[in-house]
Length: 318
Image (cartoon, rainbow, N blue to C red; front, side):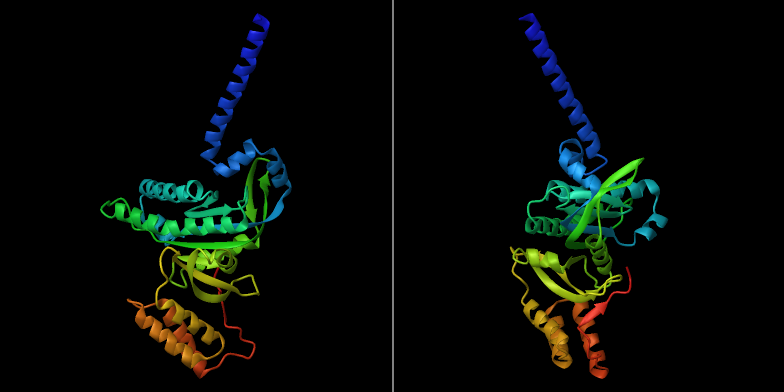
């Protein structure tokens, strides 16, 4: 009895100690890598072994970046800058990881790169919906942060750009023997980064790729922005602005605007210009996209595009 009792106690004690150590390592890892990545490293040996080789899978990627960050770093006190960045990151990462089950891939300076479908998936449509939900939630979250910083002289008002794209990527362990990183890479990631950058040119805060729009159009209201050819690609992609979820009715002017875009691509520039102007008048405070298309229509009426024109716009900048 003594032998069995002490042996059982020893086994239980060792098991409990192992679990405590595992939790300690898990909490430590969670501070330096995404919770989903930590789970793969500690629990899912098969997924970790697969990632060592690299596998191709459909993933939804989110890129978020703070506007004019370089100027901010030059003008701000380092301690205050880092303190505000940490407050901002804490709020946004919570929306990505805790609220919407995403993987925080990495911080790239002031930028956030997140993924859905890399370490685990609930289905590509659910992954895409969670990514868009996170992007949409980041909008009021930033507004709330800016409001809380309004009377604090050590804080400044922030603005961000967000790009969300879905596509095949390579998911794998990349790096050197001194340090490895479980990450995603490929064309799907690059396009998400291009969309984030393009928010500056189209004067909007969130741009959505066409594959994400197809997967989530039943849940969110989108506005067509442009048929865009980004640097490094030859095939144009449809790009959309994220307006709201379906709990809010679409604005009355949206249908007229979408008809105007279709007329523009059919080379009906005079009719399209009239509809864009009508839409602009309906939107209080003016509208950059309507003004952009009106300007293009006026130019094309004077000098029509070539016969092979497909309505796309080439984005020269990254």
